[in-house]
Length: 451
Image 1 (cartoon, helix red, strand yellow):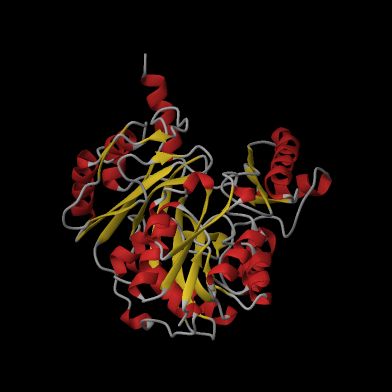
Image 2 (image 1 turned 180 degrees about the horizontal axis):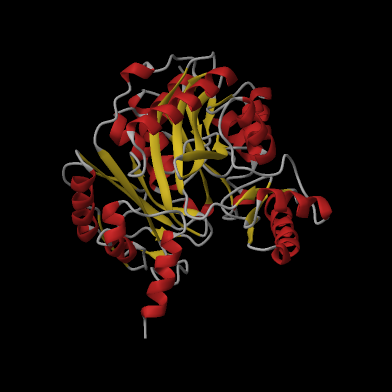
């Protein structure tokens, strides 16, 4: 087991990793920018090191500063959390070159799955169903039009590198394609330094289903069920739940087994998430995230498996915690991402939290690093915290979520709590009858209804 882990992240995920380390008896090192000097993970860690000014490129993405922090503190492993350097294959290699352990997958797998075109090719080879689309990068030429016509409009133009909805445009008709290609390519170049884009069939009303996997790096791998992440705004997940209201037991078992088998063949190490669009009973692979997900608590609540703790244990050479036959899905869980944003315009709302009261009670969990008096800085993501609830049934879970949302207090800044209080009372949400475009259509309808 590791002696000391440096947590190369901030906010709630840094605190989440710190808690797992403490339960394993591992010493912790928090790194922080000058803007995060009063952060909760900094207060609770055994040691802390300031690694630079507020901009991420000068602090949380500053690899030399992170290496120096490891050397100063004697850390022997680095946990990257999510975002920042968590899916940077070169960072994993640099750590290895300095005799430091990267708590995550092998660099080769990070690099492979970070290239969306190669990831799609690999998925196809491993027997994972994929969305119909181009075999590689396309440009604004006759071949792109020919491929689009073969796929059938509408088509989706997507960046080969990166994610989060950037470098992604829909072409509804032939006339739209050239503009979509150039716009997506320019966005991809700006965001990821790679202008390559490819084409996929644009599905009309799919669900976004992701399968949680866990591998030991030696050919052993299991799946831990699915999460439904279909409630999204601008390709950013807002609400996640598991199991999915859209899947039956047979579909769940089939796609889970397919993903687990693929991870076994890859000899995948650590946690990962295989993401799909699901429509008319068919799954279509879209990408794989080679890191812990923001929404991992949903899976923890329904399986009673601590994913972050197991991620650390397996990175240190441990075995899988259970066999596939021992994985039991228990009840239902929902997560709401509460952000410091205006609930209508979604304009960021950084500032000081004047009043803070997290909800409690049976089956209620808050993953947050904020506290009363904490100032949310304007330099990073706007996440206040994740409200996660669990119930024996989806109906019980929804009622518990409604109660918890009404109980939660965050004052001094604007948050998205009012949006969730409305969503949990919407008939379509209560019935589980929604898709990846539902939330944006709902928000557009709400805006039109206002005088």
